Image 1: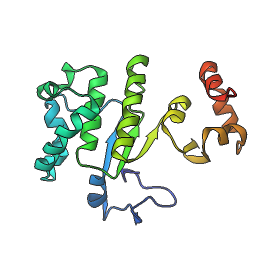
Image 2: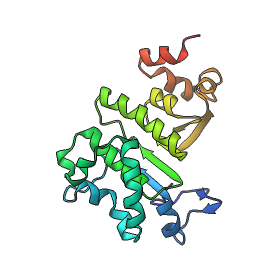
Image 3: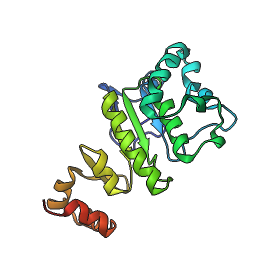
Length: 203
């Protein structure tokens, strides 16, 4: 989706423009990206990590002003800005990564398993905060996760993939009650029983 790999077939469109080598420099700054480990540079301060791309694009003044507005929303204390990533907790580092993704006001936010490396309590807290942030900023968000409960918590629409192939899309209830193929049922059934029971119990 970011144009790092060309699709074997089909195309990726953003704002009706096909993603290509010719327009990557135009479209990529409109995408915010957070990966599993945060991808922070250990030799840069938190502030420098957040503003790295903004400075490269010479948009650092606007980004600095927007950063001040984002700090309360992401619940990152301003005193953390002058620290280095190794001085922060795992949850704080992911908040920094999120700030870096948001500071250029992207149209699209891509989250590649951003919470999977965190312990359950921190993960739960960040899930709540992340959902509120995406709703408050009204950003189209694509979240990659193997955790079905997390997908149900976040998503308006779930896309289930198997070996690079789109198997089915829809709400959780659609996937549960009208599976397109046996893989869908196997995937849902493979979730931990407590999670499965929580989302399948009748009201």
